[in-house]
Length: 322
Image 1 (cartoon, rainbow, N blue to C red):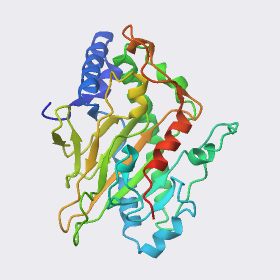
Image 2 (image 1 turned 90 degrees about the vertical axis):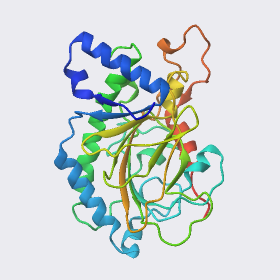
Image 3 (image 1 turned 60 degrees about the horizontal axis):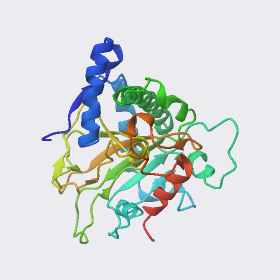
Image 4 (image 1 turned 30 degrees about the vertical axis):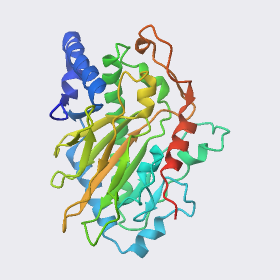
């Protein structure tokens, strides 16, 4: 595969039954081979993206002391500000590397289940967000973006259900109170010497259902590992979104679909890179087990897991030791 393929989501949602079937078949093939695609005609307003993008840039340009006001005192909390070198994503694969050269700001679900679940990991996913005082419009901009991407995630899952020859609303029951998360990331321009194997983001696979990525269209960085072992530079995408499946979706499909390893290279000198990764995940107590259409007469490869506990364990494995 020479490139990450584009898919017209609008054509699927508005198409005839035959057109939907043809597009879904293409998606099934892509997810079996690489697990990455570019979603075009996605329905997210450009002004929503631009407002979130601008607010994030303003936040990351603040003095460190100001940004640290939005840092959680709990190192295991996935919300708030993460300074440089506080995460090493390769650790989620059991690989020891230097900390990743990035800083980030995380936002969790804007609402949780009506009835809290008695589980020690519940707070990890649905705890209160940590909003900085500056810039003042950050909260409103990221709230609008979060809601728009959650709606996009639901539309993408309808396409994915069709690709697995399931009713289009199949995944809705598992995403009633989704553990969605938004991670806004800044990769500083390369400066000074880096440690061996130190990158903007270490080699990893995402953990959940699907990831919807918006990256700056002027600076490359994301690279994806092909089945051959070669690394493919992801294209620079302007209006579309890069979507990839995570480990949870791979488990759901009995590894019919691949959760592909990827990493982020350090930006060149004098060029900063920014991205916004939206993780559209299942509800906390959703049971993740082999989808019936993915068994092919074989026994499931994995035991059922609860989505919340699974994601909690994977996130903690990637925290850098300070």
